Every structure is written in structure tokens, then in C-alpha cells.
Image 1 (cartoon, rainbow, N blue to C red):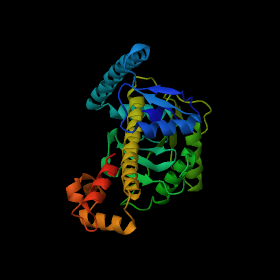
Image 2: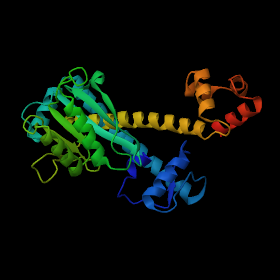
Image 3: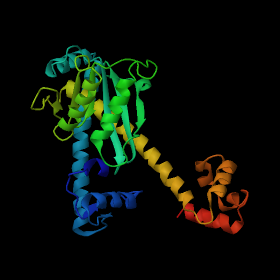
Image 4: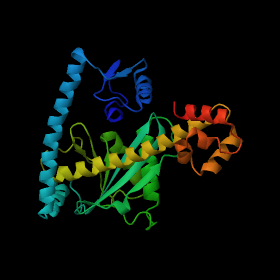
Length: 313
């Protein structure tokens, strides 16, 4: 949530209070400092006025969640009554689409200051997730924070592979990107470059006001907040964000663990290779106790203890 809330261009305060201790608090604080350009403290207040503020924020969050859950349940009930087609018709009319958007693909980017950047593609068919068609992308061309360039790369790779029916069964009836006019502009560029302007309808969904942007329209389209059509778009947008950030966290965790082994005292490239060969994977090596590490070739009991302490500091 912190990563989603504080993005480039957003005001970053000198102190951020959380209700619970973050497992990667140092990483979050470092990332926030990079955005702010000055030190940022991330803390859990235990008493006084700051603690009251956090409790108030938590109470407000519960109220908003309760309201959102109520709306979502209502939308599921509508879908359960086979009103999905009606929602698709509303989408077609509101967005001026050439056909019913039976298949919607949504794209989102996730990264930490450009590192371990990934993108997701999730799919709804007739309002229901089609998980077999979900796809994950590792960003290849950028390692600095540039969501526009990353989105350009992902959409280019997806549309360039449209003839690969095993990877991408078919083009969507609506391609949706997470973001506002800027992300929509990137999608327009890629679609035009691929010669698909008249064949592939595109749109973007902005988080803050839930406005839908379409090419050729200056202002965003505001669908009723409780409409099944908007809830369908929000559902696929939120699912694409969840899918992207889960993949990103997995890659980030692997890199953090790998770098911990690289910086371990007394562990050079040859010894690292021998350790990984002995335990079979980095995950199993991290689970090993000091006495198990000492059984690896070339590791004394003392070095095994040092390695264990380093990896689990």
C-alpha cells in the first residue's frame, strides 16, 4: 500500500506512521527517502497523539472497506443473476466500443525504484477471470523508474506476439491499462505502431477518481460508482495490480536472499557454487541450521556459524 500510495510526484512526509511493523521497513524507508530527497522515518507509534491518529486512520479504513465489500457483494449477486451481459452492454455504450467487450485484458506495472520491474496481464472473459490466460512479464529494457517506458515495452511484446496462439489466444475486445491519460497515450502509440488502431479498442482506468479515458475524448468517462460495469473494470484493474505486485515481491525476495549470500564473509564464487550444489537451492540453504551448513564441503564449523548469523541477521 505504501508503494501504491506514494508514487513519483506525490508529497512524501518526513515521518510515516503505520499500525503494524513492516517486515521490510528499512527498504521502504530507503525508497521513500529516494522520492523525498531527504531522510524519512517509518515508525509504529505506541502512545500519545500519534497513536490516536493511527487508530483513527485504521477505523476509517475499516469503514471504507466495509462499504466497498458491500458494493462488491452486490456486484457478485448481479453477476450471479446472469446480468453480466447487461454490464458489458453498458460498457460498450459508455465507452463507444465497436462490439461487446467479451474479452478484456488489463495491464499493470510493479517495481521498486525501477528494480525488479515486472508487469501483469490479466483477463476477464464474460466478466469472469480466465486465469489460464494470465501472463507475467519481466521488464528487460529499463531499470530506472519509468512506468511509461515499461508499459510501452510490455504492450509491444504482447502485441508483437499476437500470432503466437499458445501464448496469446487472441486479441481482446478491450485492452485496459492501469493509469490515466499518460498510460493511455503510451497504449495508443504501441497500437498504432502495430497497425491495430482500427482493430483494438483501448482505455485506461485512473485510480483516484475511477475515471475511464478513451482515445479522442478530452475528459474522462465517469461511470456510476455502484454500476456493475465500473465494478467489472475495477475488479480486473485490482486483480492485475495484485498479480503484478505478487510477482514483483517474489523476484525482489530472491534478489535480496541472493545478495545476502554474495556478501557473506569467507564465501567466494567457488564456495557459493559448492554450497548451492550441496543444498540444491538457495531456499534450502537458507533453511539449514549451522550444523547442517558445517556438513557442506569446504565449510568449517566456525565459518558455518558465521554464515548462518550473516544470513539470518
